[in-house]
Length: 96
Ligand SMILES: NC(=O)c1ccc[n+]([C@@H]2O[C@H](COP(=O)([O-])OP(=O)(O)OC[C@H]3O[C@@H](n4cnc5c(N)ncnc54)[C@H](OP(=O)(O)O)[C@@H]3O)[C@@H](O)[C@H]2O)c1
Image 1 (cartoon, rainbow, N blue to C red):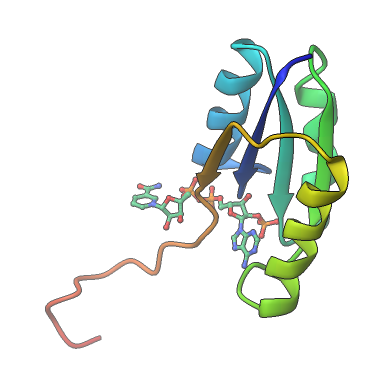
Image 2 (tube, rainbow, N blue to C red):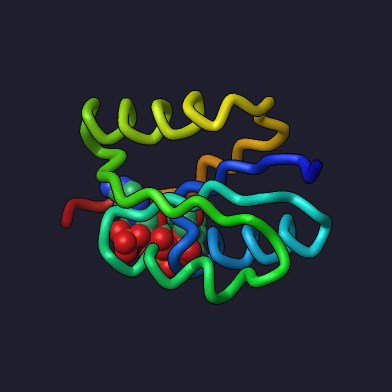
């Protein structure tokens, strides 16, 4: 059986690239995004099993939803790439 990787924020950007790299190394993927964009992940990773989870990780309920999906699989989690987030831009040292 493949190893299993959780990649948050894997519908786009860095997280999507992480998911592709892990899939190319034979990991099944649990992919998380806050919007319906995550529903496109499976089509992009046809060589492995993909579990798509739409949840807002900015909320406790969203975190719980994701973790429940991980637990429900009943498989060891080999990799966790906690990448979801957004860039606000600007300097952290200067007033906005
Ligand atoms: N790109 C850079 O130069 C850079 C530099 C430093 C740090 N980072 C950090 O690296 C991470 C990825 O950056 P990126 O440029 O790849 O961003 P991105 O292209 O905007 O992708 C962000 C990913 O995170 C998901 N996401 C955002 N908020 C979420 C939430 N509340 N719950 C669940 N999923 C959420 C998005 O899904 P939805 O769109 O469906 O919400 C998307 O899949 C971010 O944490 C960012 O702060 C990026």
